[in-house]
Length: 306
Image (tube, rainbow, N blue to C red; front, side):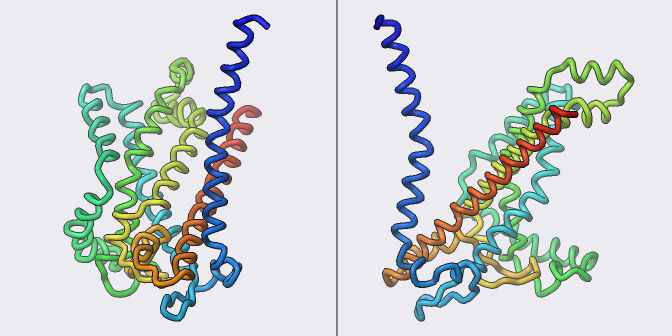
């Protein structure tokens, strides 16, 4: 075997090890979480994820309030951040021709560099009081007939947690969507304009269409960040393990309860339960990413057959 052939073989093997290390790390992480939470899994079984009772002193645990809080706060964040993020990305990529757009882009990306604890402090002293005195009364006066906008006003609430998450994932959606829009070939835009399309029609057909799968990927990446965020949400969501239809009431997330109670775990069962919550959060994230992959694949296949 020639030296060049040997070098190619060694190169392929090394690159294979690099590629295999990522699924291996995920596999080892799953094994660790399962082994450390086996005491809880063995005792509570499937009932752990469908029970709402949480009493560490009586060693009775249920993860449903935390799963509900994680999903609801993340959905609120997406409802707020996706339109804002996509709109900002469209402006920066397709509309603005001014030099100021580069400064706006830099400021948007700067949001991603702010530590989550700083967001949490801002949420406690600025966002939560504003939501309880302005936003929640306004929403109730207009949409009070809906159960999600009923109840007493509380600054530390599910709504506050969702809003702080929306601000935190906004730069992710904006930056990635902008890069995706810019990667669309210009000849598609020029072809649409040459056929008499308006700017809106060009954006809808020649830009948003080819970029759809990438946009979905950006949104799912932001959703994963929202589901796993800990500190900022812990500081503003209220940390009460209840399931309430009202967004004005406090909630709790999987990441928040782990952060709050892990250092104070009083028994092996309590520690095992908290590790199982981490396992549940990881499984939820994997499910969301799997669904996103399926959605992206179907969108891509649809574009190819269109």
